[in-house]
Image 1: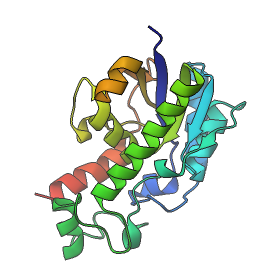
Image 2: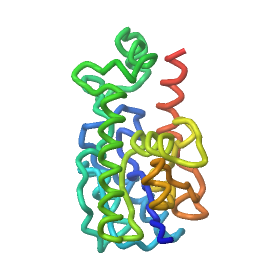
Image 3: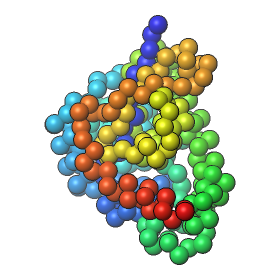
Image 4: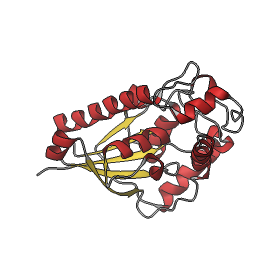
Length: 225
């Protein structure tokens, strides 16, 4: 039976990553270090060849796609944007430590929204709908390999929702410019909405620069206790 390979790849480093800031809907571009690190990854490791490309509309994802795959003209999927953190965009978890609304959000983010932002429930519904539409597009067209350029929170959510083996959200922290390869088996996908996680992208890379994102995650976990 035909199967489909999908590679979820996180965008390169931005200034917000370096500063430990929340950057969701804010269109923060790659920084010079981010572009440099992507070129290093590309020269040192081999990214898989694919037949289709999809990307979040934010520039950090589109630029990452063009650096890794210069020939790409990605299909833009608006619903794959990162969570909208509203008034907390550009702020760090440390800066928000004394904010009671922030602490409430950390404990109940599925139901609670940042001021002028998006709740975890709304975010999850949006990215599930968008990801499933991409898979439907691949199945309909018979395209058996694709790369999707997205954000850390988007990828962690999708992997924890659909992925096998099953792991929690925080287990899927990933380096900038890296990600995971997935196998979509049509019968399993149509029946159970499950994909198999095959391994990391690019194969053989190390997790040498996840510190920026892990810091935010650890801060959020600690503050929610």
